[in-house]
Image (cartoon, rainbow over all chains, first blue to last red; front, side, top):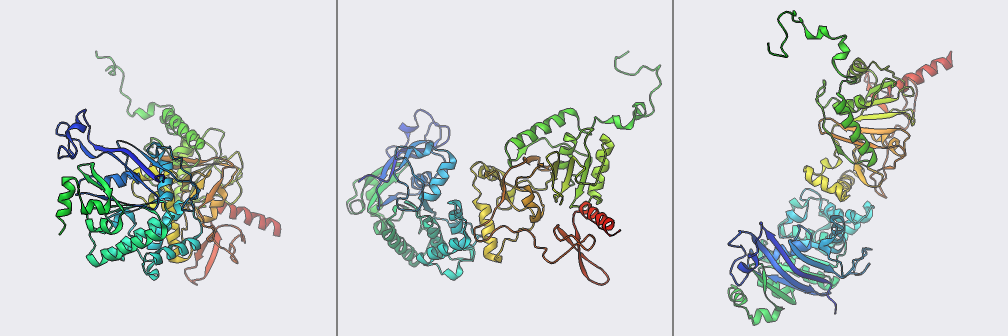
Amino acid sequence: MKPILRVRELTKRYGPGCPDCFDLTGAGQGTNQCPRCKSILACRQVSFDLFPNEVLGVVGESGSGKSTVVRLLHFDFEPTAGRFYLDLKAGQQSGSALAIDPDQDLFALSAFHRRRIRNERMGIVYQNARMGLHLKVSAGGNIAERLLMAGWRHVGRMQSRAAQLLEQTEVPVRRMNEPPRNFSGGMQQRVQIAKALSTQPAVLLLDEVTTGLDVSVQARVLDLIRSLQQELGVATIVVSHDLGVIRLLTSRTIVMRHGCIVEAGLSDQILEDPQHPYTQLLVNSVL
Amino acid sequence: MTPGLPSEATPPVADWRDAMPSNRHRYSYAFLDEGAKREIRRKMLKAVAIPGCQVGFGSREMPIARGWGTGGLQLTLALIGPDDVLKVIDQGADDSVNAVNIKKFVQRVTDVPLTTDTAAATLIQTRHRIPESPLGPHQLLVFQVPIPEPLRLVEPSERKTRRMHAEADYSRMWLYLYEDIVKFNEITVGARYPVIVNRRYLMDPSPIPRWDVPKLNRGEALFLFCAGREKRIYAVPPHTEVTPLSFEDFAFRVEDFHGRRCERCGAGHSFLDEVVDDESGRRTYSCSDTAFCDQRSRQNRQGSR
């Protein structure tokens, strides 16, 4: 099977950089900050594949670069180096007519094209709803924004699509015209999920979706994500520091530390039989 | 003796202005110095070349306050020549304070003839209206613009709005209209209705009423916009497509004056102002464009005679 998404040698450096950066940082050196030039390598030469229908977990402590990877893939900021390929045919898995050349490095595209790809082919859910939603704009409007960006120009159709998505994500449809700042944290996350799914993306990115929610709400949101993922078959990357989330949702996992991938494999294998000392520590420290 | 200092033998001039041949020659023609005019003309050419795109320029200090039409005035002064005939309107009226003062000033520094007749004017500076009578290819319309950035309503950061223009990402403006429809079941934007120029740039047509927006589309005249305080020039060249943002199920509408007529000239197809009589409380309507109204009243009188 051919991967739907390929990432090669993705690197993000904050700071000037020096010739020794790569030798002096990383999991082996125990830091992601270069002692010579003080640059921080948030992620360094990260490569992985994502297959159709698959849920990939990215796990690691805070500062390990897992969110950086996902947000680079969402074109939130520019990578220092690396290549990123999406293998999608027009109309595949969504109504989008946007075809992407599988051999085209997406980081080399213009901002205009990247925005279109992001909007029509990818969806993201952030830990903080403030980053993914306009809290003062109605929940329906937030979903409509993505549809408007994709070229929808019919208010009635956008409203019914928003209502359908909110129903799918278990947000009461009668509260569609309320701004998400009136909503609880769990509901805000569900609105974010509805927004991310509105243009039927081929890739869904979940960045610490349940962090900061209380346990019962976490369970509901995770349940929702799992059932939607199975229903829609959208390839998903789940970023979390919570091994419970990884166990529940993912089939394959990448373990990151100090900007490097230290271990990758099937989730069950990594959780039951961790090989790398850091992964062993991580698994052992679950309460 | 130090060169450059007046010698003690020549009596000093009491007031240096008296030494000048006439008052008018204290400033260069049309007030602005030639360098300033050249820069503004260059920026206007750029604005015409990229319809709807805001071009920055070095806005000069003018003898009227910022916010009173300094942008429009600078364009007028950079464009005007001895052969021009000038008309200035303020919300359709030829005789309101803003229009009168600008007219007086321009005449003082150029001596051009003034007119209130739209057809006779070659250069029209306007605040928030487009004249009712159709404009011809020999005419220039200069708009005074308070806020040139249409996205300012939804995004306070200049950096971000520039990025949005560069990527033609106007979803936030669309979202604003969508929210308006959700709340009020119609688009409630009265003036400054956002338009797309030449299928590319979102443009603020200055606070003209919706009534005037269709006049921008494929017009005969050149429309120039300038915001003095915000230091931006933009333009709609003749025969350029200008489309107001609208949804398939919520189309753009102009103001509805159905069943109302101008009390003075009887016009039923012009933009009407509501006039409330203080004593009786009766509501009447009159044309906002005074020159148009005058012309029609004159015709009516001639017809009845």
